[in-house]
Length: 314
Image (tube, rainbow, N blue to C red; front, side, top):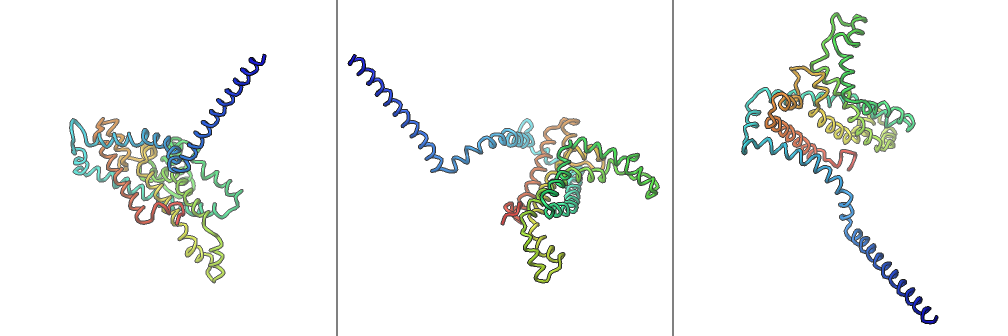
């Protein structure tokens, strides 16, 4: 019996030693992992950013790279598509129309969105949340549905013309469809929230005590707003304007539904080359030119205002 008991005790001791060894190994592994992450903090940040980098690589970098390659390659290296764009006046006119409409939409969104953002930054949180619902409503409705709704409102027999005719303000229906008026109205409706939200984010960070201090020093409320608040809100103006402009120059659904033949934007021209002409090379070249122009605008903004100030940074 003593021999059996001694064997059992030796097995228990051996099992305890094995558990202790495993525990030490796991603790060393955990300590090594913690030490590696604490020693190299960038390694931890990289581990979190790898998934989004993979998504961007698959959904953005690879398609853009393929478009760039296709614009220069057609049975060999060629520049004929870019030369065709350069020597065809209609494409230059299309780019002018695109940037003209984008600038107009951006300006209207800024003029209409700045007072709304200022009001939202002043009211109480409860009222602000209620008003924010109305700002966010366009996000909850499809762009296609909103564009068709504007078609109902703006057509010759639409609601707007009918009301104006009944009130005697006009003698004949106003043409608001299939021209720049319809395109501008529809795009402003879609892109206005993208102007309000950056403005609101910056305005909420402005210390209102600065306005009170200016008024205590003798400034009127308007002068205090103009000299103090407005300059501090300029980063939001720049961020909202850049965001709206970048989205406007590539807009497709609303211009194609509300625009006409004289208001063709670059996105519509690219779609026509792909679906009607089946000319992928020329369509890719037009897309690359648009990408180059927008990238140049982006870097000019960075040089003048700085991307670090887009959201109120200093």
